[in-house]
Length: 81
Image (cartoon, rainbow, N blue to C red; front, side):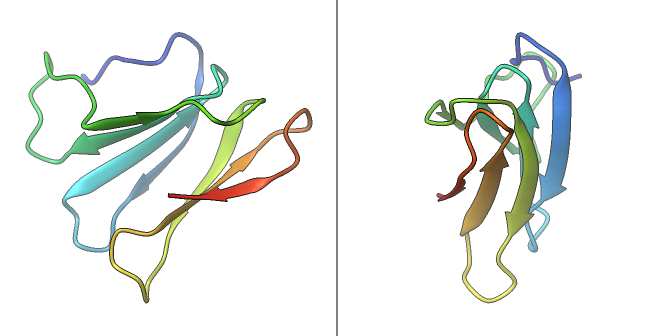
């Protein structure tokens, strides 16, 4: 079990190399987890720039380590990490 979000998780996406799991939630946070993380681990990275729930996450198949995330109605934007 990976625990970090304070509200419901809305989306999950594995990186193409299978080494990183991205999670987005109703707490407006994107967390990046190492595949080798234990249940007591914290996320490797945490992004808090969205102004609404993070409902969409997609890794680029062409650019290694590029993640696109989409916020909900109150945010109306796509961010690239």
